[in-house]
Amino acid sequence: MSPSKVSLNLKSPPVVEVVLSVQFEPIPGLNGALIGLLWEKEFRKEYPKISEHPPIDHVVETFSLGKGTKQSVRLEINAPPVTPRYWFRDAGEASLVQVQRDRLVHNWRRKEGDEPYPRYSNLQPGFREDCTKLASFLRQQSLGEFKPNQCELTYVDEITSPDFDVHKEPYRVLEALADSRGIPHAEAQEDFQLVLSFLIEKGGDWIGRMHVKCTCVFRSQDQVPALLLNTTARGKPLGEG
Image 1 (cartoon, one colour):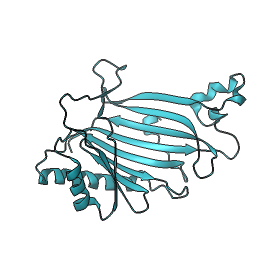
Image 2 (image 1 turned 135 degrees about the horizontal axis):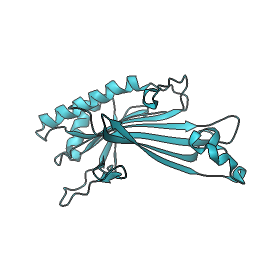
Image 3 (image 1 turned 135 degrees about the vertical axis):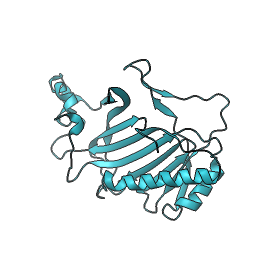
């Protein structure tokens, strides 16, 4: 079976965060005051808390120079003043929507450590509704059209084991590290970092990349050694809307 066809449905997945994100062509007029109005009109009832954060860079996966070309960050000359990114948070702060002048993000976060993962099929409709609300608001305010240019899906997994220290024996969790079990003095290892990227192909064209990063952390609620596995698929939308 092709890896692209493999589907896992774990009873208790180690997912601690899921991020659905769409990046769109910048809307220069979408300033802080208007994002506040968007929150008041469309999101405040479900997300009563709001806070301000630095914006995320505008990133596009590019392939014009071949497989080796990585994502590019857009630098704008004579750009308008930087508008912050705003977080709209629900009462329990497990769900949040992030908005800036070129990005909309929908997050689910495991806050207490034992909340069930709601599954992508239950998160995706809410994300689509958020996009519809933003697109409608932009039209109502005559700010421009909602034109997506990159889509992202990120899973953050926090992996632990009751039987061994995952910091010292990460190869027992990650197949990519299987050969490391023969490294001399591996028992003294206390930290490592793994970074990988994979091309995503459709119909003979490269349309995106999957980025994988794994680092050593300690679980916040009990300081148990854990591996934090961050997997992001990013690429251009497959169609209009």
